Length: 127
Image (cartoon, rainbow, N blue to C red; front, side, top):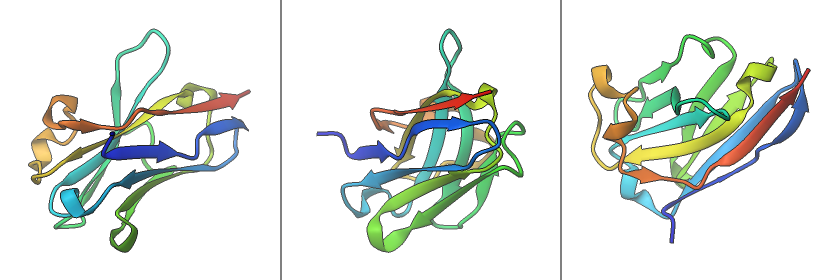
């Protein structure tokens, strides 16, 4: 059983908006760090955004800053990624990742710091 389940992916056109969600099975990650990564065909998995659950600090990749917003609903144990002005280069499988413990700022972009992963949800942006 995966502790993290993503949903909300789909096919949109360039310029559209889309939100993806990541539901945790409980409060396991309530004090840790949660993040979104993505992987496009033939490319390495890359960092998109992260949020520290305890400090509420957020972090973004330069490529999505100003277009994507990461947030958490503590009552629902759910993390969201709201994506605006989507472009074809945003096409990828989006993965939710979480750490039970808070990850220091300098390491939040490192996928190896996260031990819990969802199965991924496909986001496709047509031009």
